[in-house]
Image (tube, rainbow, N blue to C red; front, side):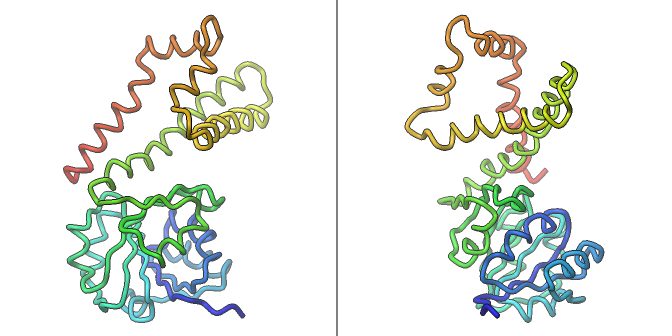
Length: 257
């Protein structure tokens, strides 16, 4: 049996953990699951042969690293009900809960914040991390690329991009529906649109010597169909709506709304 290098307790076993845990179990870590959301905990416990613990304090007492994945509006209340040690780390997955609210209630433990998305199940989650922490990074790397931030002020605007990940689902869905409406087989339409979206993202990610605008210019040449469609989108203000939505959301998050 492989020796586990760190014991991790998970408080809050819901939708996010259902998708993130299959990646994290690939790390050198042992896991305890809280009984919160018993159905999901039982499913994951059976799947990965993990122990379910009824009391949050018992999880904390047996863990070196505690992952907090409850709903954000419950985070402070849940953490206030347990006591931590100075040699522990709390890794928060609670979107929109700043360290100013959470750090005092997990003290003397060290607080680290992260933002994975459900694509972690396929090793495709770009996961925000602040501050950088070796144990947390090792735990999250199987989920996908870890993006460590230099300071907490960057965390809120960067976390908006986790919401952008959700918005892209709507765009992809609309384009799948349109493709199907043109008589394309549903499975082929889904694969075509999803893979074309991934292809664009891959070019942006890999060709770092060129800006996104330069890469687009290679495609949207004069009199091209790509440019024609792009001009339609710009006339309808479809492109600028995305950063505008991001800015409004960032302001709400900064204001705690």
